[in-house]
Length: 63
Length: 548
Image (cartoon, rainbow over all chains, first blue to last red; front, side, top):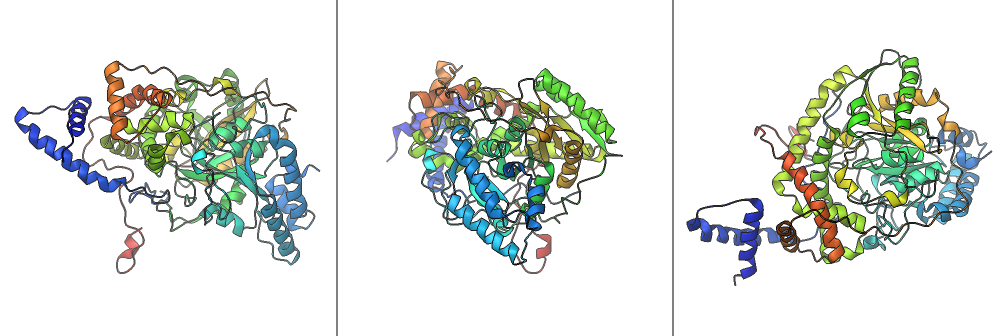
């Protein structure tokens, strides 16, 4: 079931980011936003502190 | 003989020749902690039984002819973000007040293997970040030179305990200056080693990209002795560098003839102006360095605020990622100073973080010519120490830092004492070198130290500590009603439930974080990669020597 809050958030986030697009694109973009919300749910799982990012800055050695 | 004021170099010579008992030495420190720490607040936990057991084991080994080296039987302490197996590790935070790790940090394991004696766990700004704080389960550490003043942070207990003779050395960590701030304000030597030279594994993360573990001690020579044990590759730390570890102590000594040193005069006189007394002390330090044979000339690097923009946008995002579950669950378990810094990370966008890491790579490349021309770069250290009541969280966002550029550039940076103000507060300079030139930085700092008298002076801890100030009210937020609504929306989308004071802390930081992110939104070629591009590690087989 779709959530009205999500649409209100979508509109507010567009304003904050300063983004606009043609009105006929609105349903598609809102749908994409809802899909994105589903996608990022996978990131909600808490990770313990020792889990490092895949990329860490590295110095290869003295030059 | 005041055992608590021996340096590691002095004590280890006595221990090695069996003229000093590690047990007697440890008991002297435990007695001094008992006598003084009620006023200093430098320890969160004293591991007396553990320390005496380690000291007795050291004594027995040495008596049996199994001397392990200069740290054998030496009492030291740990900032309470270093994990210790079976010993509470809190980050000085209510949110981790009962956390007991099952493993030692790699650095702790190395110190234990070297025979060092752990006296206890030390005060820190909350999770090595927010502070000084007056709303945590333990009070903030006080500066032994003046109990009404801050120690600097975040390695606050490390600075206070070593200066007052409550530990021979302490481990600190440095994400934006957290070893060098307390080293400067408490009158120690503190080294932020080259990023990747000392393992961060098991040290509670502030920022994956900017954290450095490192030593704090009374002398540069003692830092060198500690580095000999601490430095080296750790396959369990993805940022760990595979480089040969030199003999740091052997690198000390001699004059500075032929060395060329750049001075960042514009930085500490104009951009981040230090007190007149510090400027005078810097000139006197330059005369000492010239007397040792060094050639000095003024040089400029980018404005200090540029480095703060890069570091804060990236590091606050990483800090928030580490603590997000706790902040969503109950922000009230964190101190207000920590919240006043960390919450604003929700206003940082993904592209901002990438921009910060891309700009970091540009900055690191820009620094290469510096290291071709100069053997070291010198700037002033932070300090002298301010009174507790002068601190406001918003200052974190407002002011550029003398220490942070070297976290961004990643090379070694050492803070050391260059004298005292008329009020008896330590002043400091910082010595920097190219990545992995840690030995050279220590050599220069050691030469200066041996040519001056500052190590002969120790703080006299006052009999009575003045009362601590109350928790400061949040600084009024300079945002419009529309901006306030936008911040509330982002907070709700982030899953945060904040009370009025917590929301004000967030809103007060907003204009600063927006400005920082805005300054980083410049056009860059796509070939400009971030500083933290992914690299393969840990694979074996044909061609694996090219990896990791």
